[in-house]
Image (cartoon, rainbow, N blue to C red):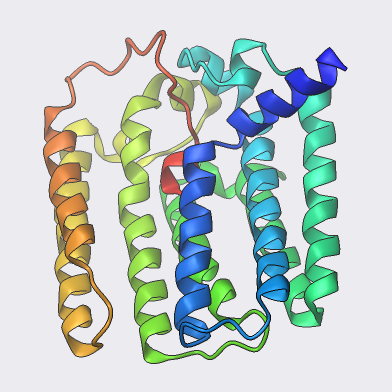
Length: 275
């Protein structure tokens, strides 16, 4: 029993609870916007959300499995890299989470299970296979952007929701945000990424140029979000613009040498991308 509890707790942490909380919020926003603020069948909508959330958790735990070498080089404190979660237990957890995702999606409807299956395939292609998408900055960014947009879209369209203008704006802005801002986490993972043969933005452009690209990119997305919010009443984006400003300042305050990351919970892979 103790091993089961340890495995469950370790899996929960490995799935990045802060990220899964954001996923849940994005699903909720999609639920509200796609159903006009009144859910037609709350139980069915929640079941669809469970399917998507379970798929997201499976993707992140699977990503942790694929990133063990780099995460350990970066001194990550997450359960797998730190040895608090056994590889076999994490693999079993992924199987369980995938099963829950597909069964919950199937119980909701054909469209939901197909969308969840496609999400799982995207997550798998990101972390595994002969040429994982995470190995290149472009592949990682596009994947994160697509997943970031897909989450509120799924929340909006599940259980006969409507694709409104607000839904399109929110999904587009969140997708663009993840496409650009998701690269921020790579500044803390350079040693492990280099060891794993990845070509992230800081490794391709160099830290200084990568900071400039990131700063300009998030500012553009933040301003675009505010402009679109004015065109579609009810969508508020000042918080995102504020987040862009914070990220810009943080990027320029990073120390020049990011090699000394021991003892920090780094190596979060796509965690900071917050699918």
